[in-house]
Image 1: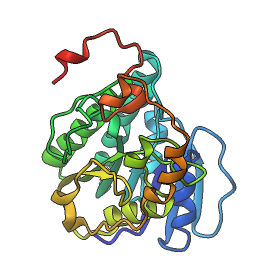
Image 2: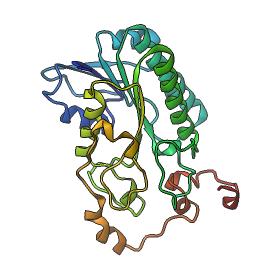
Image 3: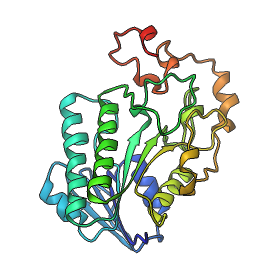
Image 4: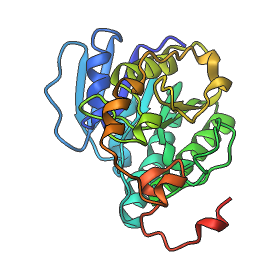
Length: 271
């Protein structure tokens, strides 16, 4: 698919800012949207302030767009009311507006928290069943399912990226992030692969760098062309020297510190 006009929702966030810089001069039009303020538009850019809950505004936002990168919504665990509005209703509005206005492709920013209660001892690929670790993780499972529906029922090309740990400054800073980190450079590369690939129906991809200690397997989506260049191991000695210990629940699962939040279950019953 030749995508010329790109929309990024949630463009004021850390990933959005990195993509804006990385895409400079690459695509003829970069439309940037958030409900938070954004820096003034540069050459080839448009800046539009919009709320995902405002369907007429979202329909206007997607007009003339070839590919949407959907980063918008609550980016961390939150109350159910916030998750429901920003991450579930807002996600539906985005996909439905894309369908109505013939957008060809949507790239959905999912999260590793969609599979957070898989045990970390297991090396997992993109075929594992969802095991969300929070309400936020549930919303990412919903977004992946919605993307599958719109791919199968309405013919959108959809990629769901289970993003690991994206940091600013651009480096890992604890033991878990040695497994889950994705660099700014690799994130830009991954997104460009998802935008520029000529044809795919639906894909789930882990967003992580080429980490020696990584536990997520992208071998099923090698066809996408994503070849990460960075490795968290460059910081391993420094991080391990701190001697920091993870929470006893956190250390067991892929979701890390999200898993102990409000936890009152029995870890022995989680297979």
